Length: 337
Ligand SMILES: [Zn+2]
Ligand SMILES: [Zn+2]
Ligand SMILES: [Zn+2]
Image (cartoon, rainbow, N blue to C red; front, side, top):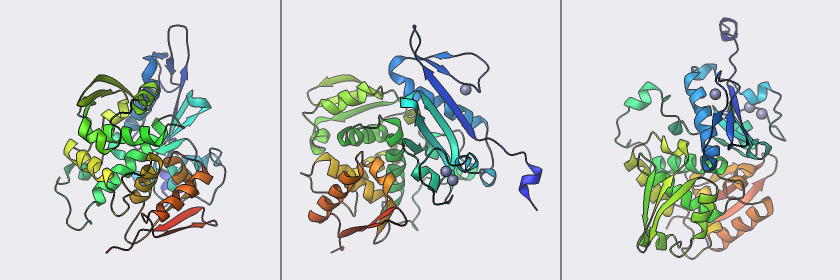
């Protein structure tokens, strides 16, 4: 039986344009009959995703009918192609310097090859989880190794932030955004205490907060001795499905991402790299698409090599190598004592 003969081919691609106008930026959506929506200046990026997610939620399609929309358009969104493979997920893409945002179904291989793009975790589209998933008991499965759920949660959020934050946002800003997103309450409010910030070696640094404010991702509501309070402006980060307790566990794991924990005094770029590698590490080894790693580490290809060397020198990694043919980077965590 051929499924294609009984179902019309479904387009799973939506895009919006953020257009500057005299009265402030507006969101133009070709899928919506009513005209441009006005936008608050700082939150344009997250408003675009929130709007696209609404369309994706409304046009639900059974998973087995979803196909790689990138492939169907001739794979024009990314440079090289090794063929479609992997699960089909929603991919958020940023084009034309952030003026155009596109959400589409894409396979894992196309998603990894696309610059300025990120897989939107299912957790960020809370209206669409399959029924079984939402009814699943909250207790942790005993079959999964400790830290497995946390690792998935952190991986999804790091991937999301790589697209949601400006391309050249610093490693420090990404680490801070990760903690804020995972620790925020349902209204997007987050409070980080001085001891915690000191632990992250951020206590006296206002720069990453300013960076996230400038990106329109959050707004500091209170800064005083002992704590910083902020309000997240990213609409997608507010609508997270996992419970606050589950997210808090993931945030905690991200501070010591076993089995790869960089030395405490290592710079933020090394800390972020160790975390990115840790979420891609299985039992005894890890690997990931090199381009995707470079983007997640907020770095450039030559600097990624340098970061990997630094991790090896500090024995956070036992070794690493490039698989040029597969376009992958592979590594081994240190031997467990
Ligand atoms: Zn629309
Ligand atoms: Zn493609
Ligand atoms: Zn594909």
